[in-house]
Amino acid sequence: MLFAALIWGFALLGNQVLANEASPQVQVAEPYIELHSGPAEGYPVFHVAAKGEWLSVIKRRTSWFKVETTKGQQGWVKQQDLTLTLTSSGEPVIITEGSFAAHAQRNFELGAMAGVLESVPAISLTAAWVATENITTEVSFTQALGDFSESQLLMANLVFHPFPEWRWSPFVSLGGGRITTKPRANLVDSGAEQRSSDMLAAGLGLRYYLARNVVLKLEYQSLLAITDRDEQEELEQWKLGFAVFF
Amino acid sequence: VETWIRSVFLGLALISTCSLAQELKTEGRGDETQASPQSVIKPDLRRREINEAEIDSENFEVGLYVGIISIEDFSSSTVLGARAAYHINEDFFVEAIYGRARAGETSFEILSGGSPFLTDDERDFRYYNLSAGYNLNGEVFLSQDLVFNSATYFTLGAGSTEFGGDEHFTLSIGAGYRLLLTDYMAVHFDVRDQIFNSEIIGQEKSTHNIEYAVGATFFF
Image (tube, rainbow over all chains, first blue to last red; front, side, top):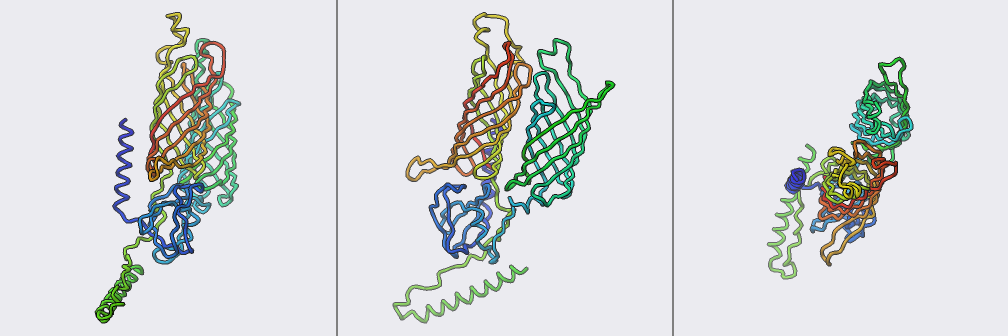
């Protein structure tokens, strides 16, 4: 409830701030520009703004921009159409967000991947900070849910991208972390117990810039668990997923 | 600096045009055909330059939901959850969900009147999942002037369910309806099936845990 109230408060505050400052304006340069009733191609065009008209840009959702004409008509314009308008100083409007060019400028990445860790289904979440165009540092949490046990892996990785300018870009990773394995409840009675050990990991992967803020990732990792026992345990992990960058 | 100089020149130009128009007006006062002044356009000099970073981008959606979940073999219970979504484009979004409920009793427990299957702690039903969703965008016409944007969407994802003392790998399939009351606030109606393998009541089987929920979300 408190959460909802907070969100509500933020929403109101956000709107207040927005209302107080003047929106940036662009001028229609093509013979006309189409205003849709919603932020998607399927929504009907219900109004057109003629050449020379000024539009205030209010907000953006994905690649659609909400604009208001000088007569107060509000509607949604797609990104390609907005880039055909002119700024107040007469320059063409340039929108780079959600383009491959913006991908090179990214600072953070949030990702989710699904795959198998030693033939057990596993889900991973990653948060990454892009240090340079070639080097990324990331933290990942993986949960593997098998028939006999549940494992949780917390890893810190250093990822190296030799060809950041390619749409299909390979990468290698090195990392370390910790794994905790808990046996299933029905196995606890038979003497199995929870254990954890340190891990080392080396990985190889491929990323593909899909569209807007999204990249697809495929990764293979070879993991080495450093146990107290005589032999080390080697694990393999395959994962496929996506990441959103900012 | 350039824009500043430009504004000064524009201002000067405006003042001179105005005074010129004033003169023309006074000169033509006797003539009835010239009655309406021609220079009524007032250029707005405070036009703000468009800066991509300053445009308020609303691609994230967060909110809460409440509903009823039918936990296979363990009656139906109230479920409470939180949802966060990121809209990739007009068609696709990704969604993370966390929900919790408290399982009831099996028919056997109720009829036999004793020997509970699960302890109190084990009856906590908690799940999270990550899904990809696809929108079918639409509009709702409540009256001629009252129109709301809406979307019917389908989700498919995976996650984990903690129930009966164990975590289970869970597949989540859902369909929902989002009604946008304003640009940034939406009401959701959802149906989701959380599917996982369980051997809580003996034999291992895949269980379907279907939930109905209503929720509210905000875009930011």
